Length: 283
Length: 280
Image (cartoon, rainbow over all chains, first blue to last red; front, side, top):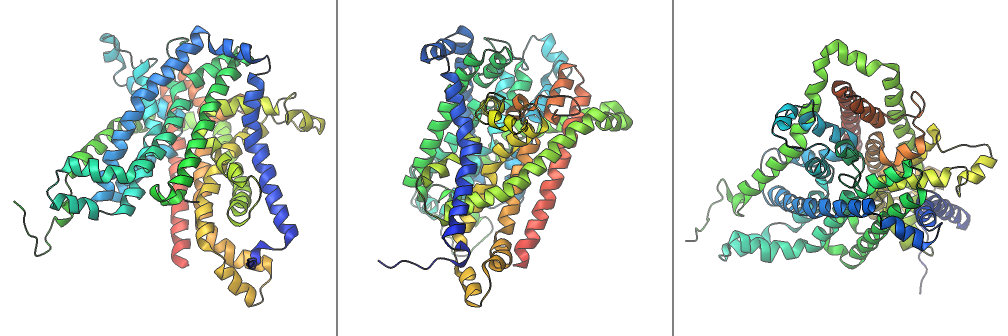
């Protein structure tokens, strides 16, 4: 077996080891240790204490609320992502790049500012505040506000994943199906969807992680009502500020577990179906 | 009935159905969830009058918070530019044990909820934490200081730089570097004159994304920052404090400044990047 010559900038053994060493030390210090700290702190008083902290009524309510928010916002994001990518990637129209930029917009807005924007509309002193109050409808400090803020920050995820993928795949297969007499819906379900299913799953995975973990935007609109409007990340904050560190880290560990599972599935998708997800993830 | 299109005519790109429906739904969602709320944000501060807005955003405490958020984000993005480059380069060009695990870990800041990152970092760097203990022996205090803000901003920005650079480094290959070496250029010169210019547009994009994310970051920062007004209080936290005092217009004024500054920097970076790409 021939050994290929090294590239010039790869340098000798010493510089190479120095670079690898630097990268590993940096990843361990800045990424691995924070992750391990969560589990170590959660288990400091033993597994039963951690489980008991997760089993309190307030913690269970927070878990239920987070699952409910995800169950509502993930499907909305899927429909939005499919609609946006179908319009942008499979058709030509004026203002396409403007629309793509608008879809990306939430990424460059602070989550706190996003939450603030909804308070300005639906809050007590907001545009519709007095009207909502008169009709006894609660949006801010209630579930609808949490859903709106969560949708704002998670909107780009699925669409961003699907647009480059669908554009890459072109329109030939769909056009062939249509010209052979297939209906629009059948074409979408039997031609497009199978082609993008892994990319869609990839986008949903990242979107879900963001939705379940969102803190800044939800923090502004939730009002931190224990057992009612506290999601899991907010409950971590409440417990932490109460100096209930075992409880805070037990709930945090549950969320960290979700992050680890997300990363494992994400890596699996990249290795296994690298060709069928967007080009930027093939490495 | 199937029409035979013998001549290209207007609308041939409308072979696929559902354009109106999908575009309409997309625009409806964007308008209700993103555009109308941001419009409210752009309008609200002016209820204070122009003078009032200027007074609100030039108050010393507000200026200090904005400086910390924007300046801290810039320092963190610069550190990430260097370290992210080293990490991306190492992950693409070299083989070493555990590479796939390290590679997967890069995305942790995307997947880990920011509040979890916040409590983790503050535990890690507190005086009895794994890193805070040894550091305090050296006289370095990270938790509850502006340095803690920086650590959190580096954490959340790193994947943006690494993930933007990786595919570009992989695609670049080593041909140009080898040609330069054949012509007798020294490794340092090759890096500065061949490698770095080729990667600069991607590096700028990654740094810009990391910076934009860090400017608005809240969850991972507030637990480790200590949140002392004028010292370690970030702009998003000040927005929340103003909201709790029912100063909606004041909160909106800070939010608007953040939005405008962030968009301006992103626009400038895009222009610089377009020029760099065009020159090559």
